[in-house]
Length: 127
Image (cartoon, rainbow, N blue to C red; front, side, top):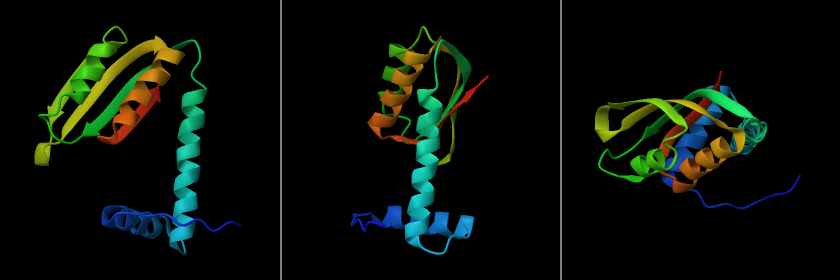
């Protein structure tokens, strides 16, 4: 097994310790391996999107005043059939969108959302 050195913020360390505790893992390394497996599973789900893809996209993001989410919604407006925006506590927002798209466009949309790095939670649930 290889040893890799990484730099983490205090927030990352706290999240890592929470993952460790929540899943009953024995150490930080095991928590990181678990997190990598979860990310790999999500990547496989996304890569399997072919043909017409329909489902619900749920996003939680910070700072209601930031326009990045509106720009993405505008860019993909033909794929978004219905959307709901709700204000949460601490100036966070919940976006729920009904999506009907081709797989490649949906992959692009998810990549755009993730690459901005401002979403606290992103989950696409296929129908």
